[in-house]
Amino acid sequence: MFTRSIELELIKWKESPYRKPLILRGARQVGKTSVVRNFAEKNFHNLVEINLEKKEHYDLFNQAKSVDDFIRGISLFLNQSLIPGSTLLFIDEIQESKNVLELLRFFAEEKPELHVITAGSLLEALLDKDLSFPVGRVDYLFLSPMTFFEYLSARNKSALKNELESISLGQKYSFGDQISSIYKEYILIGGMPEAVKSYIETGNYDQTKTILNRYQIAFTDDIHKYAKSTEQIKFLELVIDQGPKLAGNLFKYEGFGGSNFRSREMSEAVHTIEKAMLLRQIPATNSSALPIAIKLNRPKKMIWLDTGIVNHANQAYFDLIKGEYGGKLMEQIVGQSLIAWGVSQPMNLNYWSLDRDEGSAEVDFCFQLNSRFVGLEIKSGNTNKMKSLFSLGNRDKNAILVRVSWDDLNCETWKFAEKEFKVLSLPFYLLDRGQELITEYINAK
Picture 1: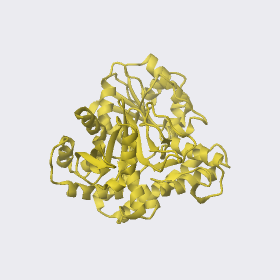
Picture 2 (picture 1 turned 135 degrees about the vertical axis):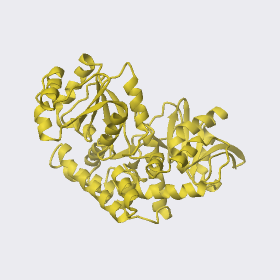
Picture 3 (picture 1 turned 120 degrees about the horizontal axis):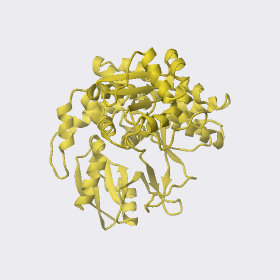
Picture 4 (picture 1 turned 180 degrees about the vertical axis):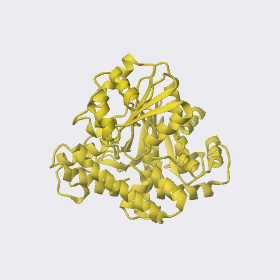
């Protein structure tokens, strides 16, 4: 069972005097159930687990009319007790019962001493259709596919992970090439726990591909659970099929994936799959003013759930980081890593792009960190390839410029068009520490 960094947030939740029932949100198969079980084993005396996809559990608890009724069902039919402080109650696949989801607010009001965690893979996609969250009565955490640091732990390379976690700005180190090699393996496999487990145990990528294909089939099968109409199914299926192939690319709703479907139809379908947390749309901005204002009429950038699935959908396996596909794949992995920063609340990401009448500059990602605008570009160390980043720096001298590449962690000074620009060089394999290192860089300026 893999250790996930979200467990630190779960401990904070457990110990908080203001704790409410927790909804653990994330796409199907990212490891939500395993995380909760692992957390319970380490932090509670016992776990009471209810899975509402099981008919016997659904039939029992969907009829509960109150919290006391629910707890009585646990005692009478599961022969278990809920002991405050010692027991974790875990309700899995809660989206199957609108009644149980609505009961969560009463757990917060009537039994605040109990520790309750729920999870459900399709919650977001079902909200508009059947469900609504008990707003203000629950806490949230978000689980993404495994990050690179989590992958290192799974590969029994905890000493190496600890070393990476201790590197600071200005520190010299000599193992960048070796780390890059492991990172490329991570890009290939991705961060879906079952795929990672398979590859670690067997070293057989063909077996891993079988699992990745299984994910794709499962995602397609899920469509029927949250499609609003029979007509919408074909649009949703197109997004599932073509979305991974567009990962790291800009896209438009009109003619999505080479289809002849209209913008309105595809916009709704893409947003629905986004609610299922299989993709993230990254909108454009043409300004570095805070708060960041998005340009709704501009193409968006597609970031899919996981690079392993992206590689499988594109039939790209071992020769990954070369040519046009390699460039888009690196945008995918950086976007995926940035999204994983949003454990307690979703990470708001954009890309920065000038309006057409102003030029063609485009910076891959931008976001607000504390009170600063950060522009992040995926580039090699070549000034001619960093014109967009320098264009941003020229327009906003307070913007924080970050170059993500295979180069070492470093504070750099670049000259371009007779001007100097300060840039943080952040290697791909330290993206998990990006917020911390960028903050350190800001404070040192």
